[in-house]
Length: 296
Image 1 (cartoon, helix red, strand yellow):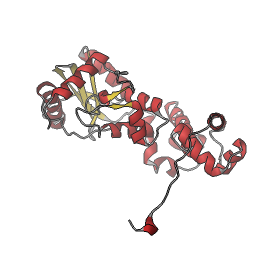
Image 2 (cartoon, one colour):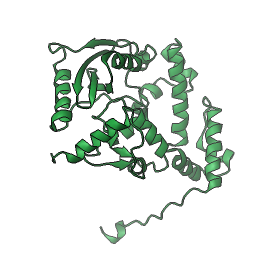
Image 3 (cartoon, rainbow, N blue to C red):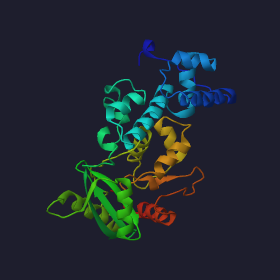
């Protein structure tokens, strides 16, 4: 790189305790006014810092900007209004968005389905599911027309079906039949072969649904290769949110697509297993299998 193109960036200092405390106070201030039009200048005046300092310190503390934080609060209010029977338009304005386009026009605010469907619990969606016994126990996989939205281990099919209904309470659920869902059956077979016979991990489309932060974590997990493990701290660093270790761990715990989104490859910083939605014994066995498998 030519000399004129070189830039020197000073390392950013750690937040002092007093600044971190101010950011917590600022978050509470935003929470008390989710519908107000809070400008960055207003927040800076309230907390007694410059606008640039507030923007940088708040994101370092919470992993998002003050604006994104308030939008998340508004969106939560919006979703609650929909589930209580408000119209979409009324819910949008009552939540403080100010315009329909600010909800529909932001991909990171989407909940995996149209907002008008969210309030109906996914009504109108068709989800096919299938169960198969694997060396790690019974596994249920379910898919929309976009891809796999659910893959969970369980003791018996009835319990897994109840969990699927809980995740998608008003969607139309139907057992997969080869004539109607060739893809799901083939994906299920490929995943079974991966688990039981060390075949390559199947490359299947995923219908990932969660908050913007959860989705970022889950997509980053897809880059963790078989045989590799990372800590929650390292995952947060790779995400560009080094302070968000707990939020990363929480997102891993809320992953509903086992193995295909490999949250089992995330450990605590001391190397211990941490948590796993489908049991620590299963997590340990998955890791041991991957460590012993030949390179693809």
